[in-house]
Amino acid sequence: MVTVQEIFDAAMDLMDEANESTGSTDTADTKEYRIRTISILNTAIPKLHPYSSNYHAAATTGRPRNKTLMADNRSNPDFEQSIPLDDALCWSLLPYFLASILRSGEDTEFSMRMMTEYNNAFLEIRDKSPAEFEPISTPYGMF
Image 1: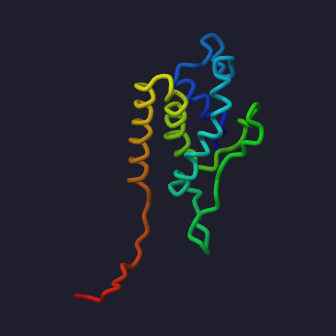
Image 2: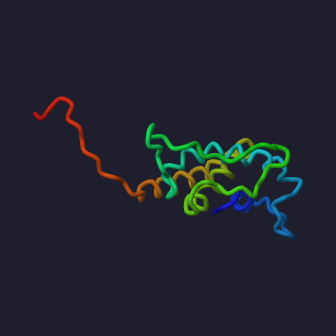
Image 3: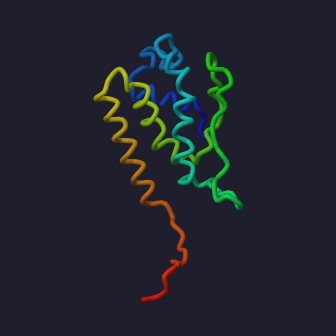
């Protein structure tokens, strides 16, 4: 399972925010990004969950149980949490999404480029997701 820290590190690398001498992403410059990260990921996870290999719809309502990260302590978020999506979704989508949203108010061109990468990767994953056949209803009969 991929952790929040791993996705955060990948997003910081995309944003060129890692410390150049140590490679650390936990710096004074990234503190604001750390505080916002779990909230931002929680906006993407429910949308991506139906495409995850660990998706199971609830038997009675047809809706999956809400999958999100715990955001109890905003000043010191728990980055060791596992993201409730499969690894392919996490690595191919979330770093681009996170980098795009974190930079949206600072660098519009970079943000749009990252969101384009996210959208292209999402479309590729969606198009390759297995589908199930179901009978087509004919409410008005056959013509």
